[in-house]
Amino acid sequence: MMLGLLLARAGVEVEVLEKHADFLRDFRGDTIHPSTLEVMYELGLLASFLERPHQKVEQLAAVIGDRSLRIADFTHLSTHCRFIALMPQWDFLDFIANEAKRYTAFQLRMQTEATDLIEEQGRVVGVRARTADGVLSIRADLVVAADGRYSKLRDAAGLRIKELGAPIDVLWMRLTKQPGDPNEVLGRVGAGALMVMLDRGSYWQCAYVIAKGEAERLRGEGIAAFRDRVAELAPLLRDRLGELKDWDDVKLLSVAVNRLTTWARPGVLFIGDAAHAMSPVGGVGINLAIQDAVAASNLLAEPLRKGRLTLRNLEAVQERRLFPTRVTQWLQLQIQNKFLSRVLASRTTPSPPLPARWLDGCPHLRRLPARLIGVGVRPEHVHTQALLRPR
Image 1 (cartoon, helix red, strand yellow):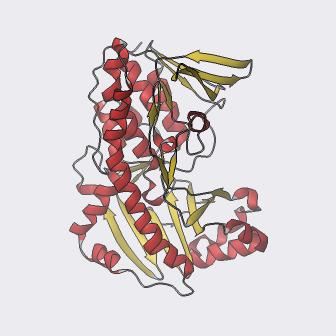
Image 2 (cartoon, one colour; image 1 turned 30 degrees about the vertical axis):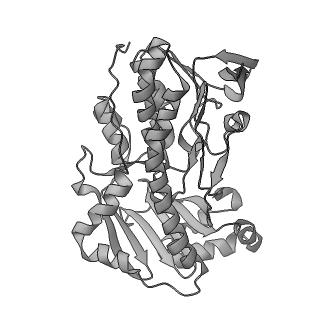
């Protein structure tokens, strides 16, 4: 959606395909980081974007056992917004779609699911899509596949994935936020358990981290036993855990960390989770995908507009985005393998690791994780010119 907006703004005809009828469904990631808010500023959309309901997160904290530690402080970033905005992803998508629709070069097709690539003489020249009215064929100079970690178009392209490993899965749930609850993002670490609580204003969006493949065993123990696990880890939630009536109220996110070895073939480019599935560690997945979109628009708008797109242009996008992807995934794997796995395997509440104690004791050090999480490695900026005026 972001790439569609950027290209249409730069005078390129764009069609975005969305398989659902609307955006109103539960997404796992609702964190809009300062890097993405900076893109909104560069597009002149920040003020109107922040009019949408959201919560501001200026610091991140963790509770390990009975000790609370501050680990990241975004208030010193050199960005226009020195906070993370928590906003339902359907609101974010709806905002971007409405802005993109103001350009005559943009078209959004809802209930249109891309299912296969159209190839001619070794080049991708379009997609086949399933609609309510049957199969639709759409031809294009470029197909950009942003259809997620289970990308059908990636399978159709026959590209190779490098699996990096993920020792964790995540159980997502929603619990009411009550007066007197803290107003911040909290990570809670206990004996063999870890949970992140995202403040969503009227409710907590909770991510309960489990060892890979443990979901079926927990389901076998029953929902009551799971409620007891959550209550032990986060006692303040005990009085509302009855909201988890059965396992339908708990959603499993099967975590994968991988990336394509090649992101492009003639006529097709992969970005976002379709190119590199990220761990939920740091909540950076959406924002890394948007950085891909900004880089792609910067590099491809002019060749597309002039009808001179080559495979080399597409390869340049991977070259630009591969380094930040590698660094971010490496950091996620270090945290997964050296901290999360050990916590989940422990039978006692771990003591705060030395780096966490350093961060808590030194406010200046908290700026480093804030930079890595909030801005990331090699942040992208909008360089395309607005050649079309919005309607």
